[in-house]
Image (cartoon, rainbow, N blue to C red; front, side, top):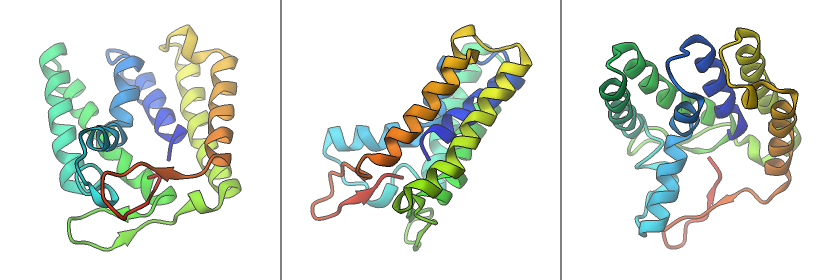
Length: 178
């Protein structure tokens, strides 16, 4: 899931205006950001072991939720932040193929192998989040204009036509994009 995570961030922002879209977007894709950091550092995290498993996402959510709490003084901001990180996992179950528990099997529907189906499932999630944010009147104008919805659609279409391979620091493992 790629743009679908952005839809989750937008929908959450519509309900919790105290959390910035600029905070929620990276929080929504935090496990993916961690994956890219591991690659940059040369750390092997096969199939999202250190980023996309339930314990890894819970730890990431706790850290980011703690930061949100410390910055805002709001427990709900911390809990919502942690929840957005954890929401990453079920969305990736739809599109990806990875482990969700250390030592567990690879799980997921691997919709990245079916780009049209991925587009038809993921884009409505992204656009629903955009629409909810727009209707709430609580979003920044740059995120709620029609051009933002068009940008989401174009981004998803682009992701679905590009080769779906994610860099890995693991020798001999070519990972699908989660």
